[in-house]
Length: 392
Ligand SMILES: Cc1cc2nc3c(=O)[nH]c(=O)nc-3n(C[C@H](O)[C@H](O)[C@H](O)COP(=O)(O)OP(=O)(O)OC[C@H]3O[C@@H](n4cnc5c(N)ncnc54)[C@H](O)[C@@H]3O)c2cc1C
Image (cartoon, protein in one colour):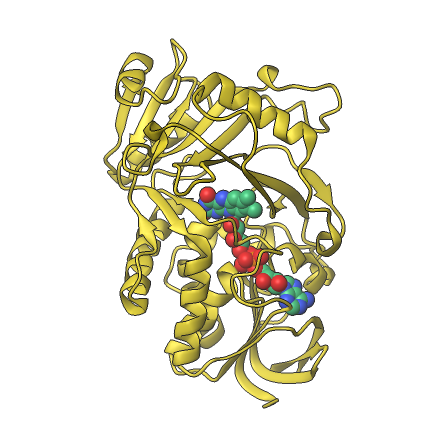
């Protein structure tokens, strides 16, 4: 193995594949390392689809990053010659005084985005396959939809390789250490030296940044495919996101049942397995994601079934398919992206908190800037990891 690189990228999943592409495209001599092959199903970037949207209820500062992200997804699709983004729209439903509806409207207002604000009657008329309860509201964002998640990762990796990047799977990274102004990465295939290091390790970020004591929690999430009538086909059905009262799906053993709200989301039916649906809230906390069970969880399945019976009554009561995936939650559920506070040759993205895929292209670009220039013009200051790192 060649042992001297301009940059080494740990992790070739969502963020790492994009960072590798942007670094290689800039002419840097780069290597990407991963335990698993591109597009694998053992991390956080699999399961066919991811929602992408701009009117961001979580925090309006994400919207400018999303505007850049949309342009980058479009460039990527053109460069690879495949459709990666499908603009089927997004229907968001919830109480008028909840978290989602006011948050979406606020982000849309601040950034001049066009969304349709609907009463329950209007939502039920326009989207009869969903049940919006009387007194609730809905927002429809047309310039939203889904990305094909594995295809995006594979596109970044393929184009990175075409630009000269080395992509090595089957390699476990055991650790890294600073060496002068560069780094040494210790792997199952020996040591590799580089001038810069980018860490994009998803659910394993805390292991590789352990000295920062980042507050990260890995949660197991379940995806369910349920057959449904033609009204849920991609020609007629948008992606969806519902905020529902916790009382509807509370069970006495649920660990975080103090949460006041549950979120469920999903995608139109793309094949015979049916529409895809999942709960965004909850999730079993894992200490060893590599060895986690990948079986369905009865309580999660029951909550999803309860949600469907009430809000998408046409969907089948049993799964046609199921998959598991990891959320890596930061303490405030916002990403941690920036330079390492003590080693400026190291940058990382961590804690994407279950909403990061749509940003992976733009985060890859930001990490390329940080690695090659030491700074970026992209507006990522609000994601500065210093807010979460141990101070000593
Ligand atoms: C069920 C589910 C639904 C989601 N829905 C959405 C959505 O609709 N919209 C959205 O925007 N986001 C969504 N997300 C979140 C989004 O998918 C993630 O935030 C994003 O994919 C994380 O990318 P990543 O690069 O951080 O992690 P990953 O893609 O998992 O990449 C990390 C990589 O690092 C490798 N790695 C780690 N440690 C080592 C090591 N020591 N040695 C070698 N290799 C290593 C791993 O093998 C892996 O390939 C969802 C996530 C899940 C799980």
